[in-house]
Every structure is written in C-alpha cells, then in structure tokens.
Image 1: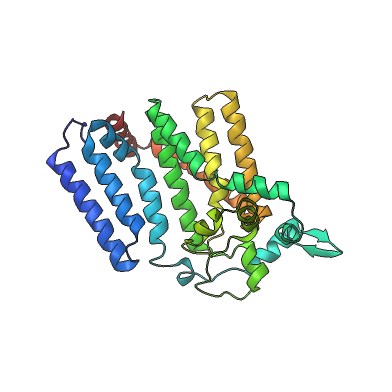
Image 2: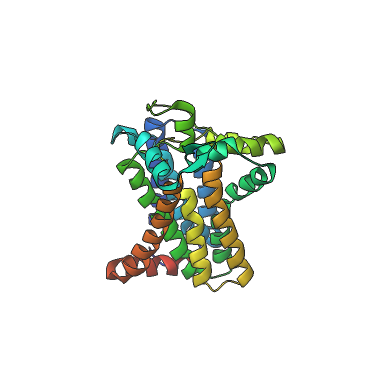
Length: 311
C-alpha cells in the first residue's frame, strides 16, 4: 500500500473497481447475486470515494469484508463434497465425555436441554447469541475510531485468521450440529435447511423472527466443528486485555463470552466438544499471528504499511 492521499491514485481506483467487479462476477457465476452482494459493493465504493477518512475506513474494514465473502463462497464447494459428514461419531464422543443421566438414560447435554429448558434461560440465550458477531465488530470499530489503530488492525487480522482456521476445520471434518442428530438421526441428508433449534423459543417469547431469518441463510449446516460462535469473543476479550480496557469492559466481555459458550450448548447448536475446539481455534489464531506472523520480516513490513495507510 502507498501512503494515503486526499484523492486516491489511479492504481488504487482501478484496483478497487476491478476487485469489486471480479467479486460480483465470480459470485454471480458460482453462487448467484443477491441484494446484499450489490449492497456490500455499493457501500464499499461509497466509503472509498467519498473522502480520505472514509477511504481509510474502507481499507481498515477489509478483513471483515474478506471474512464475509469467504463464508459466503463456501457455498461454491460445500465441505461435505470434500470429506464425509460426521454425525454419529461426534454425538457418541459427546455422550461419552459429557453425557448426563436423564430419567435413567444417558443423553448428551444438548438432548437434556432440548427436553428441559426455562424461560429466563431462553431470554438470556437469545441476548447472548445476538452478541456473537455485533459485539466483536463494534469493539473493532471503537478501537478504530478511538485512534487505537495498531490494536485495531491486530484484532481485525486475528479475527479474519481465526475464521479462516475455522473454515479449514469445516472442510477437514464436516460435522452435524446437535439439533441435526435430534431431528434427523445419524444419516446425513444433503441440502438440509438451517434450523433455529432452541433459539426458536427466544423468537416465540419476543414475537420476533430474528434467529429464524439468520439461520435461514446458513451457508452449510454441516459446519459445527469448530464452533466459531465460541471463538469470536475470545479474540475480542484478548485484545480488550491487550488494550488495557477498563475493568467493566473486561467483565462484560467475559460474561458475554461465557454466555455464548453456554447458549451454544443450551440451544442445541453446538456440542461441548465444538465449543472447546472453537476456543482452541481462537487461541491458536492469536498465537500464530502474534508469535508467528508478526515475527516474520515480510509480514511485519506489510502490517506496518497497512497500519500507516489507515492511521
């Protein structure tokens, strides 16, 4: 990247236009364009060309745009076309490691919560799960706007890296979520639609369809391992600590993080195994970035140029 100027260079203009055109072309050919694809491209163009502050923001948000595109593009080659889907193996491992007795029968924790649930828990479960992406992204934007852009960039890049590690995990070990085993048994059924599972109780209690609309757009239901729901707040909390945020921010992030972990199991969206692997994914991403990539001269120079552009 070159040093930012009030007016973007011709190279920058053509790079952005060509990249967005290629994104729309490939998405249209392999997935099919939806209104959100056009909206995302339009927002990026507006941010990039309105002025210098918004152009810096557009460049700073690239890790999050790449995350969204990467997730959506997994539709091109679903993970179950790469490796067999695990339904029974994961279920049996969960029951063996974390099974609980219910009426004299050994069941998974998810099966227990599918049969035993409480209104107050349903309400908090919905609140916690609504935080899993908005809170980390809001934290990143706050870091950026508060001029803590070195920390912001480290956080954003780790957020992207953790997602990419998780996506690799999806392809290495395609796995069904707990609600699938509960509703469909152990035989994989391709193109199974997303399921709101236990979060439907929050929708019913509030009269909203927020989770139904979210899970209706799920790119692939056989992507339960690792749980990236469990990973995001680990990354946010880690960089809140690095940034030396106030104690109440650390406390709030910790509560949200643990709440999301519990909700993942309570709502039958993830096994405890998935959650533990998601936490490990986040820690691995942080370790690789901070102790690996940032020690490499070439990457460090790239990082410094990126930082100098957006600061």
